[in-house]
Amino acid sequence: MSKILVTDAIASEGIELLGSKAEVDVKRGLTPPELTETINGYDALVVRSETKVTPEVIRAGQSLRVIARAGIGVDNINIDAATSAGIPVVNAPIGNTVAAAEHTLALMLALARNVPQAYQSFKAGEWKRSAFMGIEVRDKTLGIVGLGRVGSEVARRARAFGMNLVGFDPFISPDHAERMGVELMSVDDLLACSDFITLHTPLTDSTNGLIGERELKLVKPGARLINVARGELINDKALLDALNNDQLAAAALDVFVQEPPADMSLVQHPRVIPTPHLGASTEEAQREVAIEAAEQVLAILEGRPARNTVNAPVLPPDVHAILEPYIPVATLLGKLLINLTDDQLVGVTVSYEGEIAEYDTTILKSAVLEGLLSTVSSEEVNIINAPLLAQSRGLRITEQKDSVANEFTSLITVAVKTTKGEVTLAGTSLRNEPHIVKFNDYWMDVEPSAPYLLIVDNPDHPGSIGAVGTVAGEHNINISYMKVGRLSQRGTAMMVLGLDDPVPEKVLDQIRGLPQVSSARLVKL
Image 1 (cartoon, rainbow, N blue to C red):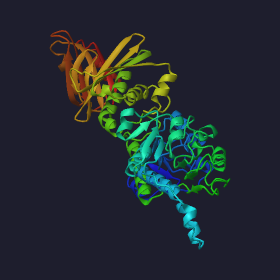
Image 2: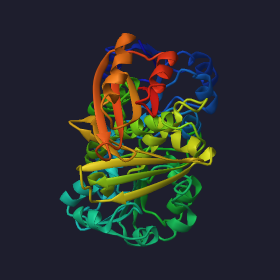
Image 3: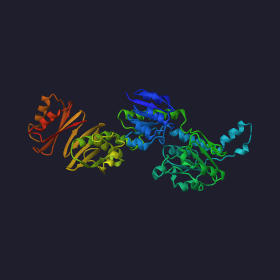
């Protein structure tokens, strides 16, 4: 049974789901050195934002097969170290989306109507209605920086308030933004025209300090800033100066560079509404992210792809549904090909035909490389690190696409070029099962359900099939199925036999020595 370590607080529903299929240990509050000492022997690590998963932790986790973040951000996990180690990192980006969007709107309304300040005054026994004059959000312009899951949900709700929406996101098409009712523009133009500005971008090298002194000088008079994303997106000193100089009317902050903040200057500013990282703090969100993270962990531990792997190609749900059946096809093609050649690899050409050619096929290319390298590399190889290992080996990878497939709805063809020639296989998915439909020039339909494949080249003469079957029978080797392909009558042919039992080397040599056999190879699936 797999062992899972949980080091931060997650909802009991997530723990119960993990515990239904694995052994779970909950050890909260571990420092990085303590986690480094503890992690070895665990197959999975589940964290939230408190635990720091350092390169040292990852190196110590020699059994780790997956690291999960029960939430959307993964900046507390060293992604490069995990990728180099071939460990997928998964997160739960959907479960807290609505909670973060609703908290954004709550802060926006609090800024507009001075709710916290009025609350404190009234609690103190004061009645100062005129001191807390607010503004309406109707007809105001909301600038949304980042139109991902949370930003899109904010836009949807803000439209109900009658707001004008502008946005910045370099990865959103104009058509998609138009459907959301958002006008796309540059960050500078957004800052200059927005009455409210809300940030919903991930923390990257390019977004660290996204809002600084220069940007705050661009905001229109009376603008209000909201940050429910990451504290590092805003330069704290520049924000404090902008508030003191009345360049900015007010700000609402749910996140900080250091949590809790050591410097309370912003928190205590009279025109700042602070909350202690409450964006995902709803009962519903905590339950959903815990379950979502647990599902990702169990998928990988059971050998299935996880939808929200952050250091592997990330696919929208509709694309994932189309490409997922072809991932095992691609892996199988790579694994078979490496067993069909003894020569030095020079390059690999992966061709996609039909429906799958219309999508981003990066994950399929990675699956092919995983199959190719899994039996030849001394390192652990999986769909995450296979492209890096191929690149480090100087393996040339070429992709080709054709939206028309003559024989099947979708087809993957992989050609491996070696120092002495080329070997080609093609496969597809039928009834959600991988099928090999072409071996070099031979068309046939092989569903590799047996644990071994015996691939035999032979002349298309009477007795060839019987001769191989006789040898198998003499050595009590059970044939599960057999497929035959030929180029012409009485010409060259190929037979593929699915075997339930292994073939000892001396038996394989006996088959190779048959006059009816040109060559024979055994592949263990």
